[in-house]
Length: 172
Image (cartoon, rainbow, N blue to C red; front, side, top):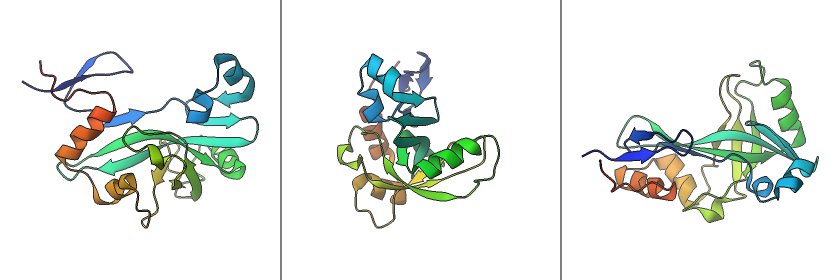
């Protein structure tokens, strides 16, 4: 029998292990009470500002598979400068920033990688239909950074699935 996963987004059962996991908000915004979030944060699915001083963009941190042709995508938030945030907002519907790179910091805590929060990232802007690509510096010796640069095998993919709340031994 094949492994299946119930999607937290749509509630449907999908075959195989998950190949992505995303965060709705940066951790510091998510941690706020409902009313504080309303008062202090302005956000949509792609950008966020907290207290008018902290700026975030949502991007994709890809970890390639070595056992198949695609990758695991972490949909996470990066804290960036006001200038990087404002440029992204200004050019959200065009490709003026295509290929531009800006520094950022990981703004979410990933199960299995709690100490990655705050790590330096490179934020690369892509075409206007795609979220920015997030990459760790090649010299960062963090396990998630190493996974991103080396790729992960099927055994490691099962660990990622567990961290995302999937029971990979569940069969139908």
